Amino acid sequence: MPLIQTIAPEEATGEVAKLYKVIEAMGRTVGNNAQLLSISPELLRQQMDFIKFYMKHPTLSMPLLAAIRIMVSSGEECQFCIDYNTGMLINLAGWTFDQVAEMRKDPKSANLPQREIAMLLLAIKAVRIAHSVNPDDLDTLREMGWSDSDILDAVSHATRMLATDIIFNTFKIELA
Image 1 (cartoon, rainbow, N blue to C red):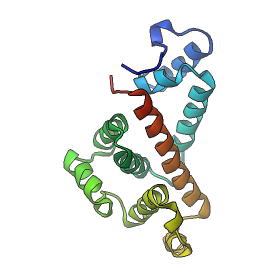
Image 2: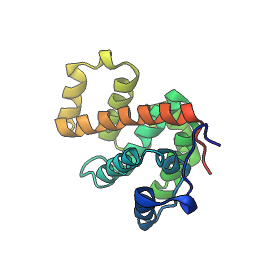
Image 3: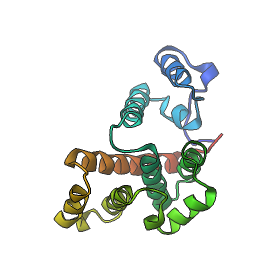
């Protein structure tokens, strides 16, 4: 049970009810993650817009984005996010549990193309030791065909995940 008051789907009215309907129309259930943000409808809307942007990202694949989220969440020990994104990789990308576990131990072993592994490693580095990112890191990604926009989007995704982990850990969000 979260430490903060949330709005259950059956109790939602007004803007929150509308946002929950959008979530359901996307074929998803209104999970504890959405319910946590329900007490601030604007934050919930912003989070939904953020998710929509990355769902349609032209170059950052769903497995890469889920891998970024798992690795960031592993550093923050956000079990909700680790479990949620592990489920995405297993159910939507065809990974095995062992492949996810191996990636968590050694991100270089991620079940991704080499150029996506390089992007994953930069995103992890940016979140864990941002001051150590250097021009060579970006040049390596550019040489692999990544644009500066791709790099910014991946790092932004990682940093947003860090913020989400902190919020979820603070208020003790759990998978339903």
